[in-house]
Image (cartoon, rainbow, N blue to C red; front, side, top):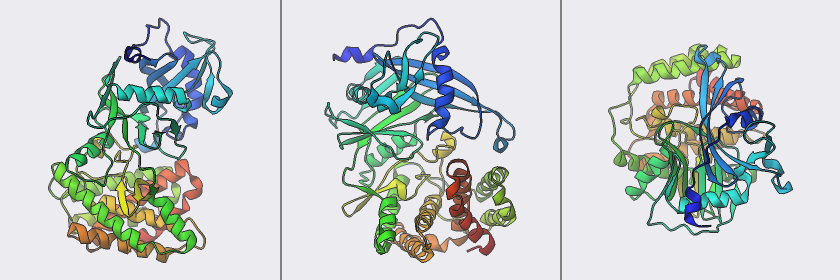
Length: 452
């Protein structure tokens, strides 16, 4: 297909497309893993932009409005989502899982609507967009000209649970599409690009990306090299637990790798003064109170958890604030051969983009990884607390060997950040995976009652 065919904006549609799509999306969106408003009814659904990427495939940015949530003080919430919708007269049986529904009215009446990311043809044409920089309506496709991306790579959509959608092309590249879109540059584009400029080999560099200029500038997707022979840290940890193998050597090397990434981040971006402990403690306390409103099981522990946060004011402030990963755990690291790589710098998608791009204490990343070792140890019965404790010690030792300071000597700081992470986990599990709620609640009890 000629390149010009990929740059054609959508034909003007007189009728509102949401007349065709609105009812279907109200039913379909809450069932998607990446939809953040599962606990709040969708009260509004509006179209922000629509672009025809190629015949039969529409790119949409839609705004969802939600009923007031207790955690937001009765203020109505809302989000912007990126969708790729296929529209055709009839859907092939092989795309049955992609079906959204059949439009009954509006400009697309009588057409079948489906998730185009599950269509191999649409996925291949999306890659062609990225291979040929240019514009389509408000969309801008850009790439690193020094890294050639071959055409014709077969796509496959990853089924793993995540807050976005990822396509792997020929086991050579992986495209992450951000489902929940916020204005600004996404850290998952900004940070790996900056680290590549520092010569940091621990993070795959962006190869191509696309963004929108309407209604506001925002990153929509990033293409990076795919580490085909790599295994994620979560899988490796569970495998070690299942076979009874020791994981401390890998944890030690992971600590070193994490320190290397933090050092590169401190060189690539400006650093700040030591984290403002009073403001940090206030933010942690606010998140705790909000979570306790949603998860009553937290209630009995709230006073002691507040003490852990309040202790930040008097404890060692730790290292200077800097750019960090923001959501570091075993699922965000890959091991290929003998090397660890760090991926997914988007941060916690539920938090504002400005916060995710702000300077923070690197202890927050460390606490996230320590919590992840605890999660892994509790996936099998009998629980293996000693396994988690050894891995935590090894990780901190590896980090200290490379960073020049030891997280274990920042006890008050580390306890506060680990507690904050556990509170986040409690709220997440209560909303998305209630069966997993006992895992972070066990940490809450440990951190609040025993205070170790």
